[in-house]
Image (tube, rainbow, N blue to C red; front, side):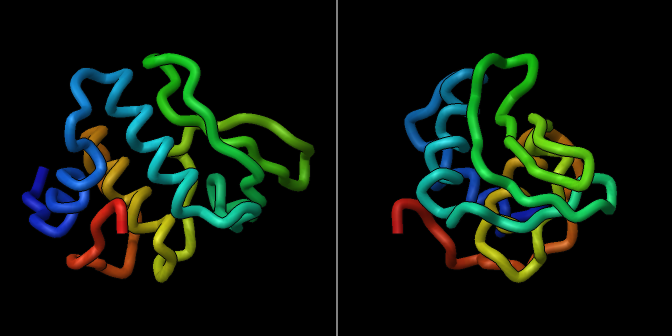
Length: 117
């Protein structure tokens, strides 16, 4: 995957002192819960949804989001959501996808972002 120094810096802030998958997911969950102001708008496969919560239960699923959409309420993998590109949650989400080896969705770069602020 292409190098992204901006996202690598974000990952360094998020994953400091986190070792192994479980601690990585927990670190992302902590940052997301601190930075996201719920409910938050997102898209799931192009369909608008409202994210009402986040959780981490196991490594197989990673961080999950509880979403309300046109077909009801359910849990989805955080990686499958897309957030408005100008938001901080989109920046954290881009770092999450990058960490997973997935291409980040479009996002407004925030090279000076760090956590905790």
